[in-house]
Image 1 (cartoon, rainbow over the protein chains, first blue to last red):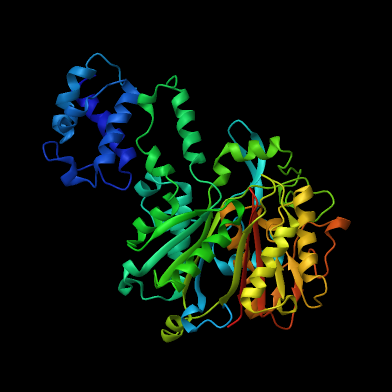
Image 2: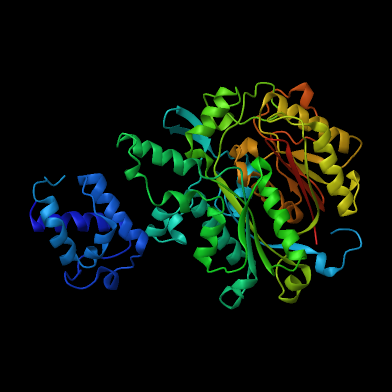
Length: 86
Length: 414
């Protein structure tokens, strides 16, 4: 999966988690929490969806990597590079 | 009112919010009951397959964001809809109500089955590896969830909890609200009951295994208490939340008063897991009457609990005969024949369907009685067509549940 495809996956997950929000204007290097109404349970949803869809395991210590779209994609890129987008 | 109690003890109903399979507000629901409109439809649920149920069609997004609906439970959404509707109906100046003075008391038959079943179903796809078990499971399944979701939605910081009382829970919620107002624990009580039970296959399967799940080629005819051909319970979802206040507070603000909680009682059969006990039911009704300072002749309408099971209906009729046998003016009806058994909501919803009788004088019927079971013959049973009275002053509402829990609420015209 390319970085662009990983971003699409994260956006798709966010659409489910934050169905009332407009995701079209998300700025990649600004914390997601500053742009969307997200709390800790929502971030756990992101982690769980990645686990369910791609069996990607994110250790708790690494949750901070999900702060921005850019940091999320950068963190996931090596973990998901050999996976096919579903 | 308990005899001799001061004005502070007088508790009145000033708002009603509800969703029933045949109406999402009191006027529509009442109209359905008077016009014989059922809310029971074909229904399908995993593992059990095709059956029938009472399904509610209220707009969840009227008071919740999509995200809140996704995160919460169906019981929470039912409660939030009903609570918001009740507050709007009450005319309370809600933005200026001290939220710490509001309590939320919601009766439930069960809670957590729906969410647990859904998670296990999902987990099956992951070979039961609990790494895939949702972090939402606990907040969705804690027993206070439906009441807690109401408090979160409305910013209520007074006490909130559910009252687990099987199918007596709707009345139990009203009773709890009444008691907490009398204790001074709150100034406004949001009290009643909710049910999301049609979303758990377990309740259908268990009734089926018990030989107590209704079936009929015409779903609207499946729920038929007192009929000789009745064959069980139609499971329904629904909710009904009342705004309860002290009489003085309600009068001071010029609120419309639907009625006063004149008396109530709860007791236990202590005799069987599932079989009702007419002696204890009769004692419960008699205790409520005594506390109301009334006798059986004072009651105009008895709203029965009867669910359409072979033995339960007969036993309630025995209890009603024991208490009201000689009463000439009593009328007896049943709302489950229209909407099915809405479990934790049943007591509250069935009372609500009768309260407009204080204004319109009508007693809605029990429908689907083609051939009255001789053992269910009751003086004053209103069959298939509503009964027009000159005046209705007192309604007695029965609600009973498994493990032998009985509840009775008496409401009188103010």
